[in-house]
Length: 464
Image 1 (tube, rainbow, N blue to C red):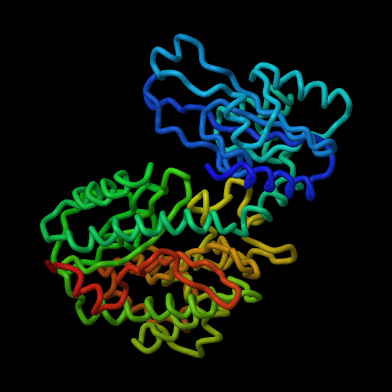
Image 2 (image 1 turned 90 degrees about the vertical axis):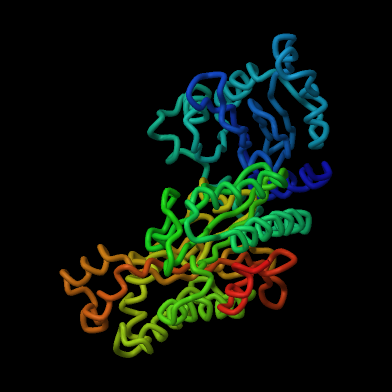
C-alpha cells in the first residue's frame, strides 16, 4: 500500500472528471474453489485497489461526486473470525490508511444507495466481471443481470481509464520490481531447460521463483512446444530435440503490479538455421517497436510498422510475394501474427480490460478494424509518457488457418501456400518485452533485458 496521500490525490483527480451523482466502487469477495471454505487466493479488484489500496475482501466505497464525502463500507471481524484468522484491523483503521475518515457496516450500503436513487441521483459503477458483484449490483440497484454491462457508467469508465493509463512514479517502481522477478523466473527456465523434461517440470520451477518473491503469476503460464497456439496452457509435452518452446509468463508482486515477458527457446539449446531465419525476423520487429514507440506516435502505427518488417522478412524467405505495403494493407501478416503488437499493463497484466478494451486501448475517433491481427490490437492509442505497454510481435505457422486461407483463396496472390507446407511442424515464435513510454522514447522495464538475441540465448542455455 502506498502512502495515503497517493490515494487521496487519485480520488481528488477522479472528482475533477466525474462531477455529479454518486460513485460506487466495489471490492472483491472470496471465491470458492470446490467447496465454500476452500477458496482461491484472494485478489482485490484493481480499480478499488487503485483508489483505496485496501487489500481485504468484502469492502465497498461510495464517493459523493458533488460534496466529496467518502465512505468505506465493511464489517469488523467477530470472535469466530478471530479464532480462524487472528485479530484483524478495524475497518475504521484500514480506511484511515487510505485517507478516508468515514466508515459504515456493509449492510448500510444498500440504504445509502437507495436514498441516492430516491433523490434521483445517478449511481456511477464500473462493469462487473465477477458473478458475486454482478448479483450484488443487481440487488443494490435493481438493474437486471443482463443489463449491468450496458448500464455501467461510461463517464466513470473513461475517468478511471484516463487516470490509470498514465503510471505514477510509485507505480513504475513497483512494475520494475515485478519485471526484475520476472527476469529471474525466465532466466531460471533458460538455464534449467533440458531435453526429456516434461514441460510441467519447467513450469513448476518458474512458478516457484515467482511465488518466492511475489504473490502469484500475473496469468496462467504459457509454456509449450506448440507455440502456434497463442495461449497454450497444456504442459504435458516432453521437451524434444529440435523443437521450439514458447514461454510466456509474468509475475504479480504483493502490491499487485505485474510483469509479462515472452521468450522462445530452442529445446536443444541451439537454433537450427530454419529457426534462426524466422527468429531473426521476430527479434527485428521487436527491436523496431521499441525504437518506434514514443510520445505522439500511435501504437497502431507501431503495430503496422512491425507488420511490414514481418512481411518483408517472410518475402525474403520466399513465403510471400508482392509489394510489402500492398500486402500489409491486405492483411497478409494476419496469417502469421493473428494478434496485436501489445497491450497496456499495470495492476492488471492486461490493464483495465474489464472496463472495455475500446475505452482503454483506443482514443476517441479511433475505430477498430476487423482485419485479422490488427483487429485484435488491444492498445492503439497515441502514446504519452507514463504508458506501460508490451511489445510482443510473433510469427506462427498454424496449419488449420493456412489451410483455411488456401481453400478460400484468401490473399492467394501474395502467399506461397506450397512452400508453407514445410512449416506445418514449425510451431511459433513470440518475443515480448515490457516498455515504459518516456519523454523521449521508450525503455524496457526492469534492471536487465532478458536474453533475446540468438547468441545470447544459446550462450545462456545449457551453460553452467
